[in-house]
View 1 (cartoon, rainbow, N blue to C red):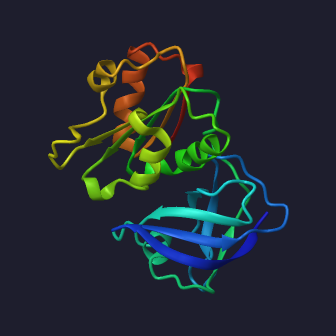
View 2: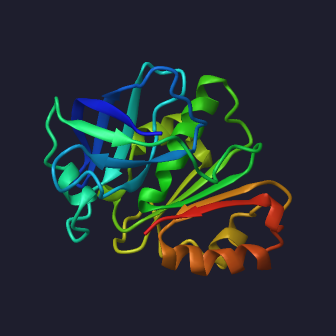
View 3: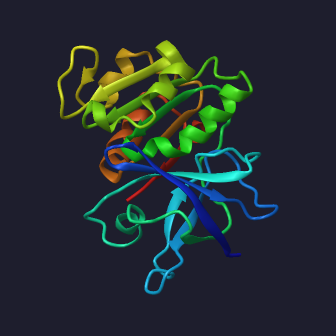
Length: 223
């Protein structure tokens, strides 16, 4: 089922990530971590649907999306940066493979953090963050989405690693088998994984090699 929503607020949260607040259709429901197909309600763009994750909570009166802008991706992602308050979007029903299944390890690459934002926000609200850790890989420090929020929520359970910048306070490189082994990945608890294809392709077999069972790996990639 399709729903038309109105853009109420637009703000930049990093140099290339925009936060959209919209109204919320009556009785619209989703689970933290889920996404929807979204299109811009303008001629020539209505059929260009792309998946985006909700970063608001189900009980919020508005919907929130946190979207990384890729100017090389001509279409919805590129056009979103030119939206204005009062513009309209079209969304479908909620869907997605990532749902919280108990304390564990979250592993995100870049925009792959978005399904985890709503989950961690929800756990923080419920005072249930204890026992969860987040490993977050980015190119540079300025790419870290919601850095201050994540630091506040997770404290020492928030691990950052940068692949294209060397800074004393950050690990440098990629999230890989050795990095996770060094940080004592718990293979008996759930692992939540979301990132771009190269990261998913490299980490899924690495996680299995570290002893993570298929039933404990909750994953979703993006293009």
